Length: 171
Image 1 (cartoon, helix red, strand yellow):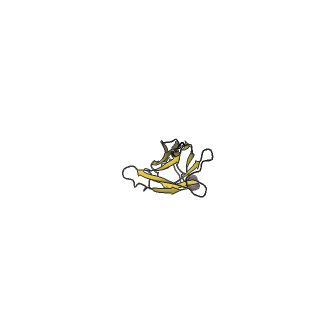
Image 2: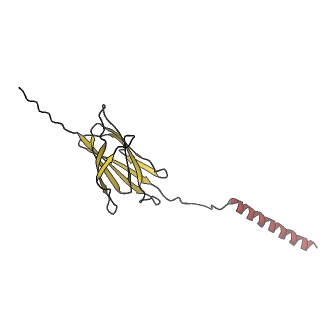
Image 3: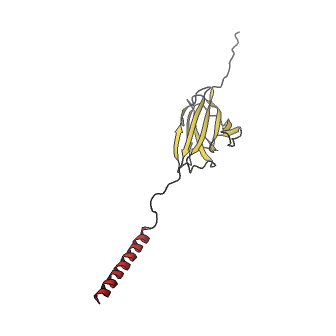
């Protein structure tokens, strides 16, 4: 009798999402909400939860290690601040992904790698850069009605003085 040996291997990859905030009005203390939508390949099942590792640039508090669970919509939802990153571990190779940042309406957003397919034994990098500068006001922003009224009063005053001066000369 022949013996059969089976070896189950899990071919997974990692997804790292990094956040940067730039500009004179960029809020580096604000936590931005991220949503990762995973689409399994060929009817494969997604795990219900994934391990993650947090990291950050110098001087910024890092996320702790832990697990993140799929929500009722089959999405992973988390928050990142400037300089923070999260690496979601062990996503099955062939799984499609889309990373969305949901609350950045005032910012000019540059994103790279935000959609694609997980490859086995690879770490895919996704970067989101939000830029916001203070609005620089140029020119006079005062109410034009005030300027029109002041000009009218000045013109009337000049006309009155001119009239009185001429009337005095003619008398």
